[in-house]
Image 1: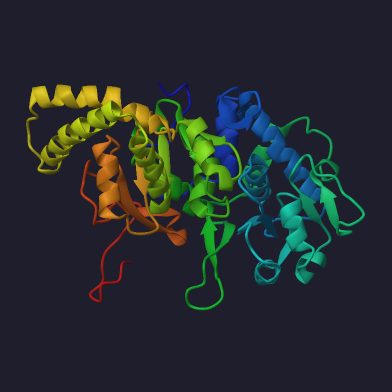
Image 2: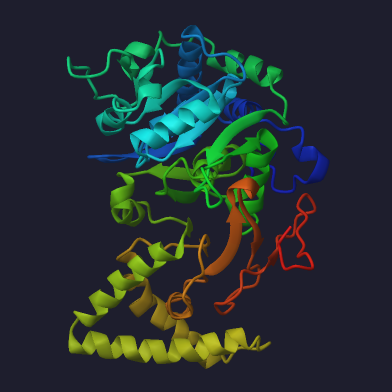
Length: 434
């Protein structure tokens, strides 16, 4: 069911060139203002934020930024941990025509100064007092007219920089017609407009700002969602756990909901990502191998500390699962029905309870990228019933341009070019991927 809104599941080629981020957000809000845009974790549990509320927050901040002097094409730095406020500042910047410069929250004062100067930023958002303390030691940051602290609970003290300001003081009054303002902004936007400068690790010198446009971000979102087509038809929970200066995390949190039924879940800080994932119980999860290694260790340690009978049941279930995985990877056309039934019992009685320890008991799409996945870890997840796949991507491609499309592939490859005519990938004679 598509709830009366046209999805972009089949958007390809020239059609995507007509899309912009404020236009997509305005369209989703017009069609389903009461739909859940994202969820935040509160002491009482998950709290829904609707698209109508989301657009009000985005537009209110954007109007406040304009009032402070931010214009189309201006660069705005955002430095902070994983929070919905980071995302709102990002989309507000893009919606009014500015360019977001994502800064890793672990950056030093020297690094922050470099990003501000290289990008030519006119405004800095910081997530909390922690990042403000870094900015206070960065001369370029101190030269800005405003440093806005996104943490709603932050209050200024005499020890804070004079150009610091609480988000509550920065924001103007609520906007009476946010949908109209967002639509007006969208009318001024072009799909080829630059919306992001993402600074990478700088393997060939100082970090360089990767330029991304509306087309890059929306196209990257579509490419990433190829692996989970069900996200266009039913709610798909996504745990926001990677730093939002990471392009994939930004696309998952901001762009996915605009074009699909994905609902990003903002939990605790990135340092507490395990708790965030466990409470989200995501349907869709993408992470570097180290995350899957950490979760696997949690499960293995639990098994090792379990009772003798539980360990015996686990060993039996693993022996059955190895036979099933071997048949799957051998691409046998017909599965042994008795073995399949045994495997189903193992999943329900042994593996799913173990997966629930890390929040993976409802996982539907699991992808790892950014580094080679150890074969033994990959195999372990497959034996537990998680159809883990590898992919390759980079900031310039806003996620994967190559991925394992087939199910239950062994570790050791990153797959094939994604099946989308908007993307072209080949290997040059010297082995370089183009």
